[in-house]
Image 1 (cartoon, rainbow, N blue to C red):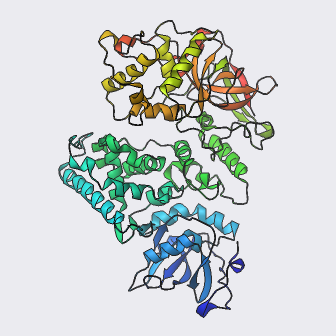
Image 2 (cartoon, one colour):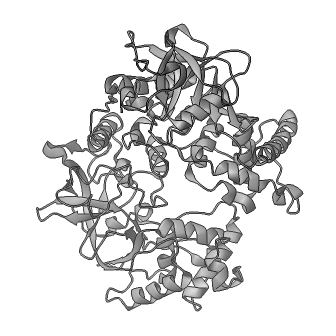
Image 3 (cartoon, rainbow, N blue to C red):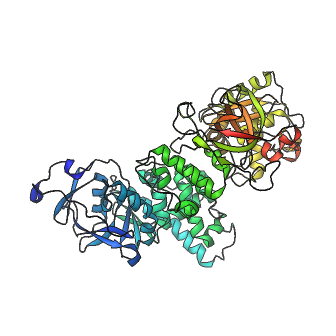
Length: 614
């Protein structure tokens, strides 16, 4: 939408031509606005001027929620009317000083939004813009309640004081940060509700802010009349996640995982005291977490994260081009990523709807569509060793062929003969018990003759995961409680002397059950399946009887593929977790592995073949 298509101006600027952007003349140039002093609802006034990043201009960058794209508000820019969105108007009012001007950068006004070429290049510069800013101002707007901001600030202040006192004498010893007592008043403090108000702000669900906040030299969060150091927010979040699981749901959504990962990377000495390992999010994991964040343009599900250090390997080889369609951007990213990394774990991030796996969809099935938010949890563990080709010592060969068909090496290991109804986060223990009984009645008996099959069934839903906040013994006791509901006669983890959580079915279904919550996330929009050989699997909701279970060299685990009718040509339905039949000692508390760990395919006379993913 161009400025001259917007509402009429009024007052002193009535009848004036709208502001028009001058072209930027140098690849290192950005525009900054000098916001003139004012207060309250006084009209906004600024000048726009070009600066070269390589000359180190002294500006502050604004991070805010775009909101509506309707440019219905007016700012006087170099004496002419320029139309801006309501949210930018609010952010500028919040940043404006009463006694002096302020040099700022804000994307929607400093970039000509009607010029796709300029927008593409400025997005490419975004990492420099935020990392070179003196400070990033995170604008939350006014506090409508009049008190939530102050209460949240005081809680953040108190937790930060705990950090400061501890870090004064800390020597960076791993896991040395003190745990609060169970009766610590801070854990039941009424101010947590105000922090929840802060956490529910839409800024935390915006895709671009991960880059904007994590690249900042310094950042301030502006909420009402309060200014909070962003580090305080990160410290409190890290403290809750590592030390106070009873209030974990205060910070339950995925953007916090990304933000705290960056905190762990940039503040190693204090993060290790909370037993926080250095950020292990690679670029694909970041994009996967980003599915649940908001962007106004689905192309930004790639572009919004290219400024992060994790994207350094491909950033210079991937053009930012808003003239391309979403699917062209995703395909270019996938091809560039494979070319630079040879990392076929990209395939684990494929999610499909009926439409996107259909024959007439405009993108090959092996290319992740990053706007799909079908699953709450990934099955594969990116830290696991990749599956090696049977006949190649190096990373498995692959090639991208004509029509973007991906040729890989792999084994067709099995086929699906039974699928359960689709599961969801609201699936109950009773529902799971019904499925277990159906699995037992299935014509293909289980292949599990070295340990009780019910443990394989349960592990298909746990996917070898552990639960943060539960010790090894507590986790065993929780698993045994679920096993007891499925099969009271089964051997428990830990044998005859095993601990079993004395839980009712309501307890197991409760959101307060940490294991139950994890299971609900993992199984959401998936199904339990049984294969021709008798393996138990967790498969995508689109999987059906007759689909192939295949192992692809260079990945972390097996996949469900769908035959196209042409020999060796398949659609990728998605990743699957298949429980290994290899022996484990349940009495010693050992849990079944995945077939990836057990390498079960070596037990069968299978020939490695070329698999064509289309």
